[in-house]
Image (cartoon, rainbow, N blue to C red; front, side, top):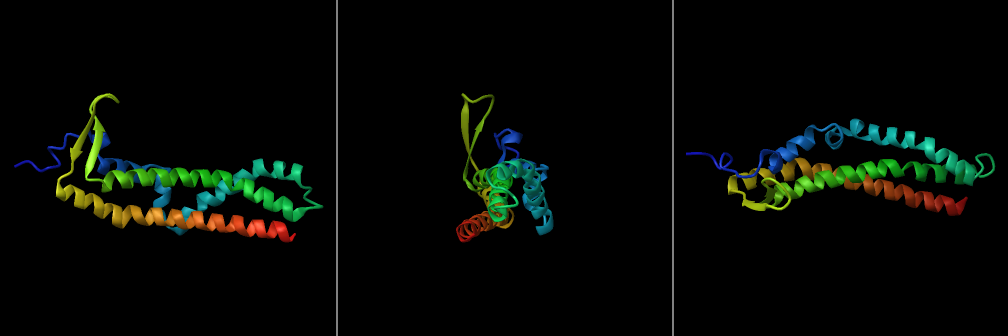
Length: 165
């Protein structure tokens, strides 16, 4: 008797479990699965590199010698744009795969955009996929939400500091 995975009509590259594996192994999206140090390192690197662009802009707007606090706050906020965009992309990729795994129906295309099909997952596959969501992907999404909260908190602190100084 063939297993339900062998009778799956969804092309291999469009199967949610394979999309998850591909995402997990990709150099960019693997970033979300790393330990805390490995996760924070690319954020700090992107923020540092972004200073190459935000430093001249902030220096043009605020003299580093006369308005050093405003210069730093403006430069730091500008430098945070690139890491935030990278984190948003990371979040959207994991969110997409999370949705594909947790849905009981798989929408796929056999040969092109014009022939969309739907396949209902058997219970065993749906349970497996939902376990992956619960124990693997949800922790990545939670970490990203915490990161976004910290970034938002830093922007609020920066705004308060801007008014004080």
